[in-house]
Length: 122
Image 1 (cartoon, rainbow, N blue to C red):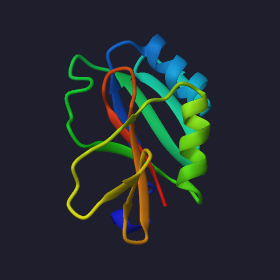
Image 2: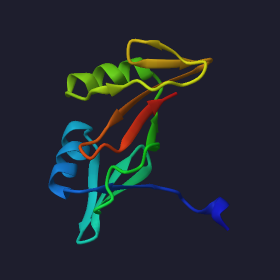
Image 3: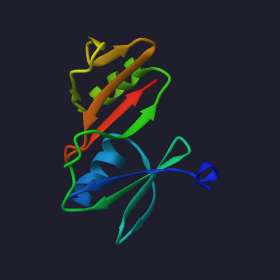
Image 4: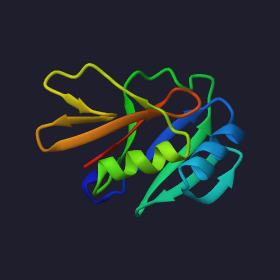
């Protein structure tokens, strides 16, 4: 049943106005819908739903990731928009600047205004 269903990420925000500035303005995602429940963005054929919640930012793990062809270029572009990157202790990972290299996988993590952890990876 779920194998044919489209999955999308949902992210809690404490302030939807601030979240819209981050996801639409800084990340440049295209807003496709807004309702009293939240805001929907389209990204690479997928969707991201941002909704208001008092539990925003309490997750200590990555809640959404973008698969990109060039992680280093994505980090550079996001950095130019003022995005700061996080470094996490990951067994076997070696950092080259803000990019963690784990064998063939490269990844970088950043946070939204609520502290939700997001990433770009290949």
